[in-house]
Length: 366
Ligand SMILES: [Zn+2]
Image (cartoon, rainbow, N blue to C red; front, side, top):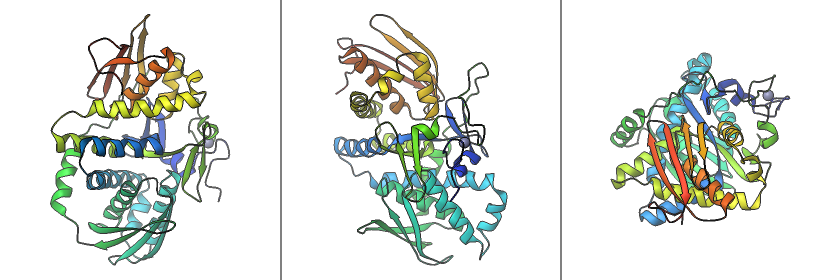
């Protein structure tokens, strides 16, 4: 297929449209932070546990927020390819665009996407084999359709033996709900700050992606599956719009801050990963943590201070605060072999996070 870079193994479609800098994976067309690399297992337990603890069904919320987020990612993608954008709206070329979107979806690890039947403006069926998450994958497909075909689509989801079948029907969506959640999402500030003095990640000479990306992750473009080489765990390039907006929708819905719940769940997941891999060896000092976060699009560690008990971190360009905080907490607990308390503050996109042995005033990790 020739769709991954011979130099580093990164899918060309991703390397061409994105730049790794300032702790983010930035979309070239918009300059916005676009993706982070996230473990599918973490993503799925996060929503399972959050749903169970909050006692509300989350699928609709994920579908709405994820759909808007996906539409923005696709708009940016088309913006980077003006010719593609022009063709998108002209029959019969939209099939080419459809193909580009399918390839893109597979490159970011959504699963194997097949368009079974689809004609512009008519009912269509899309199969996703091995979707990483049913509602979230459906949201991604709907968001793309909204952009490419210019109309809201209604969708039904059915599971079959290979994965899921999404049935799309034009013109039946609830536009009111869409507009509301779009307004909340649009107010998110996704333009990262530039750090001129910070060292850059070493890049592949052929495609510009981080040189280590292809040795840390393997991209199966046929199946639409990305695995972390370390433990063969499945990961995805998930839109930060998407996670960011889902978290905001939660807070909107519930009327209170849910960061602690998410920090605890993320921390628990990451602590289990540290316990069964050698990842902790790479994260012994500030440089290791900075590289780790930057390669995954999780932010830029700009300061770290530790004394006997307390560690304080400042991470900038953070779009999913609880994910970063949960990992730092897990790391401290893993390194010290005991429960830690923490102080968490996210102002704008700057995360300030400190940890100290449990017994202080703040929340211990469950
Ligand atoms: Zn490369």
